Every structure is written in C-alpha cells, then in structure tokens.
Amino acid sequence: MWLWLRGRIQTNDNLEIHGIPCNDACNLCDQEDESPLHLILKCSYARTVWQQVANWSDTPALATHAQETESIMEWSNEH
Ligand SMILES: [Zn+2]
Image 1: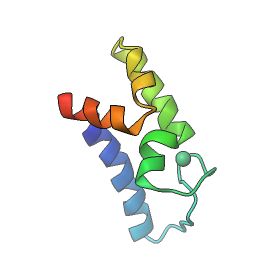
Image 2: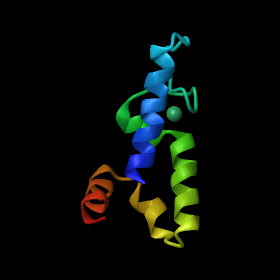
Image 3: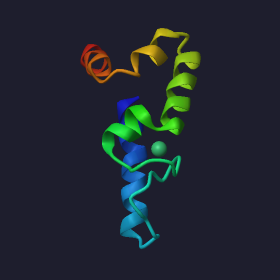
C-alpha cells in the first residue's frame, strides 16, 4: 500500500519532469495545495482510495484510521 502511494507521488513528480504544466494545486483533486500530507491524508482522491482499500481488504477501520496522521504512522509501522 505504501509503495503504491509512493508510486502515485512519484508519478506526479515524473509528470513535472517531463514538462507537463504543474501548478501548486494537487494534481489529483485540483482543490488544495499539493503536499505529501495532502496527498496521503487530505486529498479527496486519496480518501476515496483509502475507502476502496478498506473495502477491498474488508477492514472498514482502515478508512477511519487513515484520517489521523498519528494513527496512520502507527498503522504503517505495524504493517
Ligand atoms: Zn488532492
């Protein structure tokens, strides 16, 4: 999961490197400034992804978990 998220972030970086215009807004939701924290936790797109992961993995708590930075760090350490 974390590798996948990092892959998404790296994909955005690659788009910039290849000269595709990129402003400060998030490339995924285009609603807020892009930052690692936004991409992982605040982005509406990322939230959708988390929700889907929770559904796929049949762990509904994961979606709730993902909404707090400290919790997600604990979660990532445990897994
Ligand atoms: Zn976003």
